[in-house]
Picture: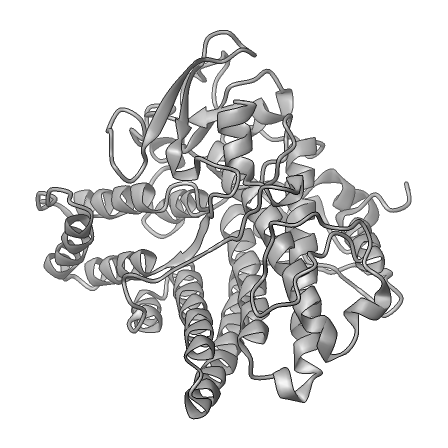
Length: 462
């Protein structure tokens, strides 16, 4: 076996080196700085190190989620999963991008391996940060601790939504050596996510109470933001698990105006918004429109929730028309992670599942009214109602790593045939779409992790 090839071994190496931790020592995490390659171990120990660790976890999550400025690749899970689904299409000639776009991934796909590695690095960073907060009594019930817990819960949720059931999660020991994990089912991963969010809710609630007692408005606001982040995250994970009523209950108190997003920068390439870099600057990806017959009309609908800018024709393939998403129109454009809009969408779906479509439609139209949009026409059949709810989710949550999970839910929870949900038929660059409905565990993990079996990870099952 090649040493340090597996995802777990590479995560272990990153834990030993403590790479790219942003130097942010204030209450917030300012990512608009040049990040060092290595942070001295002394800077990651004790209460004084917590802001540094948290900034590292925040930065690692932003990179794994939205990507970074690379030029050729650098995509995060939001773009990678959206390419696999119907949000983005490949505008270049890279075979790795085309495989993802066609839903015909090979286990050796380098793009998929890198995205997976960054997710696992971000998870490890969040877990180490949460453990560091828990070890400092004065910071156990703090907004920072809650944030680290919710970042970990969000990664678990996204992995459960986007990857095959059976993906392993590995950790590192005290010496930084990889401890290879066993395969976990989607249900097990979602249970881990809910547990993380429950812990975050407990911590954030205590932080709000403490800040209220001290009369600190700034701390109240910071802690309340983390409480709402955890509530939306829990609702999302419960929705994925098919627990609709519980999901709605989890988000009930989240205000519709709530937005919690990544923190992007303009100085360091690692903190620059990867979606902007890869759609506006290098134009290797672009917004999809009715992809593979089943895709949403993200461009032609001219919907204010997914505004695009026509940039001409791809210089790579000479034929693909470029429509860059202005939602991510700058290097420092934040990418929403959890919002009050998502909370309302969760409630709307729960209402429809409980047989109260009328209440669901009121929620959907209230959201549209807040953006100056015309109300929806009532759907007449349960199938059309589901189509309507998922179309609204597609436009509201565009580019935020929700779409692939939603397509899989339509197959798994609603009994739709994958050929009627995912892009299917003739692929626009030739050949046809594949039949995969989730992302693969990379080959490196199979080679080095003795606990992982490829048979436990079926890419054609939702």
